[in-house]
Structure formats: C-alpha cells, structure tokens
Picture (cartoon, helix red, strand yellow):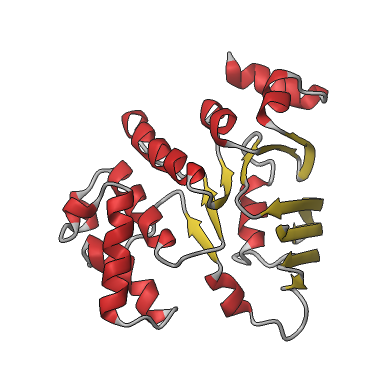
Length: 243
C-alpha cells in the first residue's frame, strides 16, 4: 500500500528547473535513502513533498488524495509528515522538554499533560531524557539533532523526512545520530532520508534513489545500487564516494 505517490513532480525557481518529472511510490514502513551530488535536487524534492517548496507541476497523492488539488487541507496534510532539518531548528530560549512539547500543543492541540508524556517517551527513545531542563546552547550538535528527532516523532507522523541530518555535525557526533536513525528504521517507521552517508544508506534502506540534475537516474534495493549499478552516472558517483 502506497502512503505517498509522487507523479511527474516538477519544481522551478524562475527559469531554473530544479526537479524534472519525478515519480515515486512510498510504501508504509519503507526506508528510502536519496543519494547524489550536492545540487542534484534531493533536498528540493524532500522539501516539495512536505510543501516547504511549492511544486510547479505534478501531483502528490497522500493515501490516494492529491494534496495539490484546490481546496485540500494543507495544514492537516503537513501534520502527517515529520521533518528533521540539517540545522536542528530548536528554540534556543526553551529547554529540551518545551522544544519537544510546543508543536504538539500548538499544532495538534494536545493538552500539556499528554504532550509531556509523549515528549518524555520520545526523548527516552533517542537517549536524551536526562536533558529535559537543558537549553540547546548547552548541548552538542549530535544531542540537538536527537532532540529534533524526538520532536518530529512526538507529532506521530505517517512519514518522517530527514534532510541531510548529519551534514552540520562534527564527524565524532555523526555516529550517535545514525545509531538513533538505525533504531527508528528497525521500528517500522516510514522514512525518507537525504544523506551523504553511504554505509548507512546501504545498511538501513529498503530502496535507494540516485538523483542527478533534477531527475531520478536509478533506483533499487541497496545491494543493486551499491553492488551492481546499471547507469554510468551512478557508477561514477559511487566510485567517487566509496573510494
């Protein structure tokens, strides 16, 4: 069963067509990794799925309904998608617990007691429940990203989107975030991940997509994409990355 169906998606910035006719089916419980050079359109594709960027063409079907159709309830659609950004996007003036509760109470209209229980449960899941009272400025980059993941989980999304979640981290902090994401992948969560971490993509993904110049060049199971890529551009990219 497809939870998301993307059909002929396009995104242009002025005259610059960044996404050119992208189609993809996302099944419930599937982990999809998107790889490719910087500027290939991966992040724009992810941001178009949750409408942080407005597509200029195509359809996005969520559980069979086109969310780009006139009159569709976009705020409600967005509550079904969690997003983890490169730069954490935490409120610096609020502690960890408040950061994980705030969207629950404002967007989902949960009462404070329920939001607190959900927040603590997800902070435990990512190993950050010891830091409830800490402000983001007191945390390492890896810890901030784990708080951001707990915040996204607390919205109970149908699909969790990760936009290069380790790219802003110091190398020694990348591992702790990837371990957290591996655990989530095993839990049956539907995940779409833009990443430069090839070993991680190979290990956790059900499907790997290689993008270049705004199109999907090749997609398939990790053993195919990493072991026997068919397209010359995929081979060249992986040779550069896997050296």
